[in-house]
Length: 305
Image (cartoon, rainbow, N blue to C red; front, side):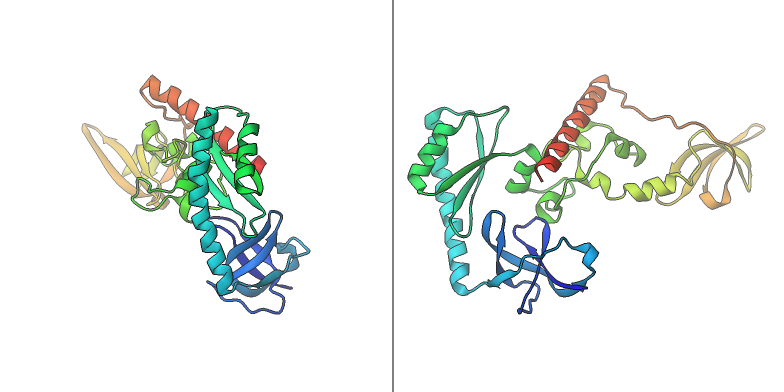
C-alpha cells in the first residue's frame, strides 16, 4: 500500500496522485506541487489515504509544501495579470491580422511561462506574434491551438437541462459518444436536440448507455411475437428503463394493446433490430457530419492528453 493525496490543478480537471510526505491534508487545502510545466497552485480533493501500488504510477512526486497566504496572494495576482495579458494579446493579434480566436490566458504559478489558448480553422503562423508578446511580458510565451470542446470547457455555460455544463463542472475526460446511443435511448434524432453547447454530441448520452444496453439485451424487440397471460401478441413498443413491454393482442374482432412486465412475457419469435433513422434527409446528413466531427475532436483530444 502507498499513501497518496489527490490533487486537482484546475477545475474541472483530472485528479493527480502525489505523495503527501510529512504533511496531513484535508479536502479543500491548497498546496504547491511540481508538474512537467513547473510549479502549480492546486487544491486537495482527496485527503491522505492508502491505495494499492497497482493503482498508481510510481514514483509519486511529493507535494512541495502547503500553500501559504503569500502563495494565495501571488496566485490571485496572476489571475489579474491574465486579464491584462488577454487584452494585450487581442490587440497584437489584430495588429498582425491573424485569423484566430483567443480563448484564454494562463500564467504558470512560478511565472516561468504564459500560455495563450486559441481556436482557428487551420494552421496559423504566429511566430511574429510570439516575438511581440515575449518582448512585452519578458518571459517564455506558448500559444496552444485547442478544439471546440476545450473552448466551451474554458468559457463555461449551462446545458439544455439548466445545469452547468458537465465539461465545466466534473468531466475530466471526453468519452466516446455515438448516434447509436441516441437511437438506443429512443431520443429524438434531430441534431439540435442531441447536440451540446459546443455543437457536438452531448457527453451525457454516455451516462446511462450501459444500463440501456444491459436492459435492451433482455427485452423483446419491437415486432417480436410474444406470449402473455392474455394470449399471443406482437410487441408494439418497450419502455426500457421500466422494463415494460407494450403488446398488441388480436382476439377475433377485438384488438387491445396492453403493457406487461418484461419478466411476464415469453418471446416466441424474435426479429432483427431495425435501426430508426430520421425522416428528414437533411437531418440524416447533419447527423453523419456531426458524428464524423465528434470522432475527430475526441481522437484529437486523446492524442493531446
